[in-house]
Length: 448
Image (cartoon, rainbow, N blue to C red; front, side):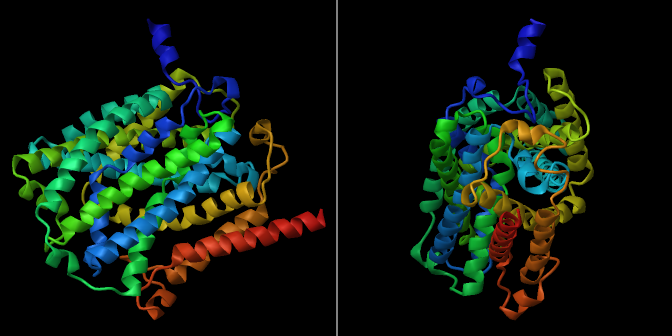
């Protein structure tokens, strides 16, 4: 019995997945990434487009455009998994060097912990508001299924996401009908159009998708190399459909409320039905948050592999996943107040570190088309070197170049102020990282 249970637990972490061991179906990725955005945070984020001054129709255009752009970027990362067979961030050893990749890994790890803690708090607060159960008890109980899914791994996560998608699609159909029944054309026309607000709303949606980029190959590496195109399509379409749909609902609800309390409005507009939807939205995060624990585990194991030689086992997965769950639980219980609101602001800044990493990684793979044997990614003294100073310099330079264009709650760059509050930091990051990395690599080719 013990051996059967051990076999059921995923036996890989940072390791390469041989083609013969890949049993995944690309269609499953649609459900994984459709489900990933079906949380209350998506609804609330969609409302921001109305809160910053757009009317519903301009907000809808910004939401659709932003998610379309971002989902393509995310899908391109996902398509790397079948080709390389290794986790997403570990692939960047090819660009940053064997040890150089630790910097983006550590930054992305804090993102996993941050989103993991905030999602756990969302579950606890939603249950407390509707049922009245103590928030700390709910955090502890909620972490149990999240950690278990992460321990058993990608196969059980994808199966869970499939059932989740089917069930919650019905929930959102009901919510959509409920919202549409209470809307009027006058409400939808409230607001105006400014380029500042439109680009900001678009940027929010683009960056929403890009923050999934470090996750995707962790799951798509279980697909066969010939399925890379399908992997792209199912990942991008699943993430686009759920994110855009829920944000459109959030924007529509925001036209009906004054204080921006989207979840409160859902509870009020539907009576028992609305009350039930809020509870289901809270409980749904129990499954979704397993992605953060799973991804954090892979990052921890990847960093450890830089210093020690080992293979991932079921026992090691249990230990790492439980420890990550404890850290997330501590952050959620100790920081449900000001700490987490501050951490949410920090996560906004994390994005400016993820964008140049994403661009460098995609440029190397799709534009320069550099290909390496999977064993090269595991060699400490291999062809990638210990630290790629050129890439690291471009990475840090791009981050600095984004700062003047940032417009956040705690800091607004000088150029953003000069442009009337417009935030185009992500566009600047994409252009600079791409141009400078291409130049550096072309110069390197000529020298060699």
